[in-house]
Figure 1 (cartoon, rainbow, N blue to C red):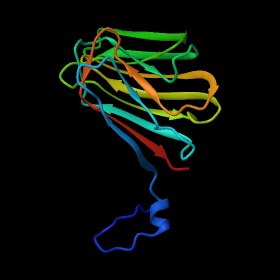
Figure 2: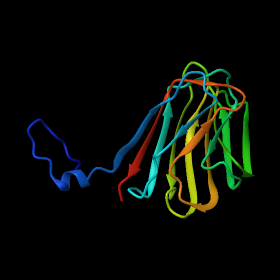
Figure 3: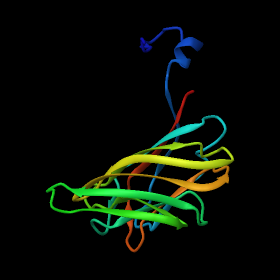
Figure 4: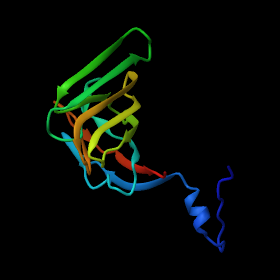
Length: 176
């Protein structure tokens, strides 16, 4: 497939626009010293699936679990696997029917970042997700399901027992 390249004065056609696969839906800067950040109005019927990224935040503690919450009700089932950069420490954090799911480990000095795909959040069915993260001393992967058939319009990132300063969350819609 040939991707469109645009120059000043070019005619922008529907065919060119339809060839673009990801569209930025929401960009949100995270506040200073916050325990959580709600990303609202980012899922809609415009797209079926989404890519979510978070980068540049700095947490007040290293190597503590970050939580995702698609709704403040039980029904989150997930598994997060992490390995240290040195290769000497590894682990798994499971989530079983809780009101949040583990996804990522904290890092000071803006070392924390993650990228995940979210499937079907705005449909009245289970929402699934999977992705990867980096932290202060760890790298990992995770995935899960919010096992409640409901239409979601957003999600929350929680920093339990510590705070986050800065960073940016971006949500992109996948074009079908």
